Length: 568
Picture (cartoon, rainbow, N blue to C red):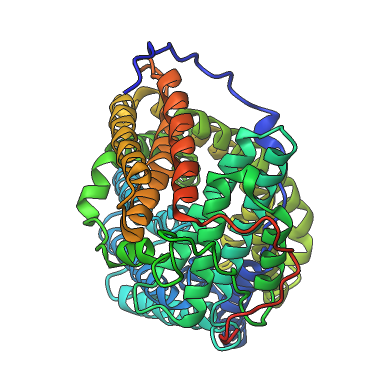
């Protein structure tokens, strides 16, 4: 282990303009946007025809489940969507029963805050992905303040369940047309980012940002490919070999042909056959095609960690959420608000991996909501032309929110805010000025009180997690270096050591260090040791891939047309 002296961490300057900077839209931004429209439209239009638009809030709760799991393979997506629908129904059931038993606003806010904390912790522990707990918290918190009787609860739950089943079908609909679409997109992204990293390395200006982005894309591709734990198909094995090549390119970017990686990425994005990677150098001791995925097979065979063990580190985040949501709701009630759940949901949406990211989300939420209430005031005359016009405005806001939120959270919030306000008008029209005023006040209350709760509840164990991650990296690096230097090392052992080191340094150490660096009021972090550990690990990874013979032949052109004999 390095003996470098830990250096004190400096509190980062809180970003404002940077938090609002727009990014590039996702390559598939239209998929969740179209999915939510397809999931919301039929139930809502049916209720318009029946003259019962007042029930649309319950069907929309189920329909919004179509927003989840778009990055997962379809076999895994089916399970995740089913669990999301069940989770939504569970939170909705608690909210409806509570609303039928009491109208005490303090009790309702307290139940909403506890539900928000549970939903936040479970969504983070299971890594369900965007929009994570926010939609679930919005549904459960809003329905807490809708008057109910116990006799109405089963019918309302049945409406939500029926819409959730329809949302499940919408999410699974593309499977027959592109059965490996999510895996292909993730693989192409990994190859393109690895190519960008290789280009900067060849130009002598290797960028830490490009390397981090590439490692994140490769990790996301592995998560996607490994999400389906059934026996992998021939196509998925071919995609796994391509991700191995992206991973190898990151270990030795200066020795990689970026054009070849980009050519593979372009071929993968289409619906044709998956391109062959080309045999690596077949010197004695190099890794053959049958052996090069041994590490992948071993990782697939490992059972996921129990949920309770993943919930432990999230305790500070859960406490922040419960405290912040409860206080935001109480303050909103004290100010005379009729809908304190708006403040509660605003607070719940803030909490990210650390305080710095939480601050950025607070800025984004406030700006997006303030612009959004102006948009609501503009569309209200159109929405009040009739029930059909109201539903069409809701659909347009749903589409806009999902189309824009990938560029920046605040931009998506510009459409989410009028959507939430329009939902309140489904049972009947409300005074526009009152809605706008209440929403602005509750947004400011939720953001200020929610962030204050985040300041009060710090994660003091973040530094210890960095120390454990450094120890794990040192051990993995020593093992990989020993095997790379040993003449009798087997291909399977080399591959397992390389993958173990990559996971330790790329996933665990970097993610842990970044999360800890954004926390305040803690002991100094060993930033210098983190940097030295990463540099040493990358050198060992490069030595390992050379020992394996995994580097592509520099003389091979990027226009190879060999393909795997697989279906698209």
